[in-house]
Image (cartoon, rainbow, N blue to C red; front, side, top):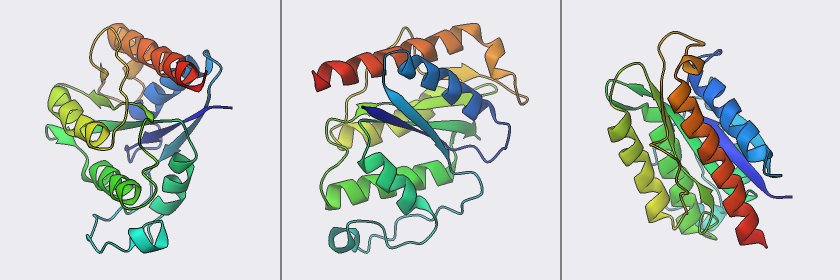
Length: 189
């Protein structure tokens, strides 16, 4: 069965980011595609050190828990990272994770090629379009496919649990999730 890995970049236990990924996950699963939500919470994700060892070891040599996530992404058909916006851009750990995931893919079996997915952002006020652009570059350089929705993949939220109040944003995420599932099914036909 096809599978999508969804990755939360939020450090909070009860985060809006995870709430949004749950809605996206349900939409993907409505299309008969399995999902798994993972989180960077509690991990100390390091930046890539450009050692090139991933080409030899087939994984990253930095020991911070990202290898387990990379292994799950490598086996999946889709990948959706979601980032809370801090000070107008994505949190550093989610970007460090994306850079290392991309480096491992490009240095080994190019497991991201033709993978379906796209970024999601959540913010109280602003910085979401810049964050989406920043994260979208990861998808383009790795030969991935981003299906559309009815708007950009962003949700406005402040306090924990408030993401669901942005009905337009949540509808956008549902449509995006459905499109991810539909596209994966089309590719697998």
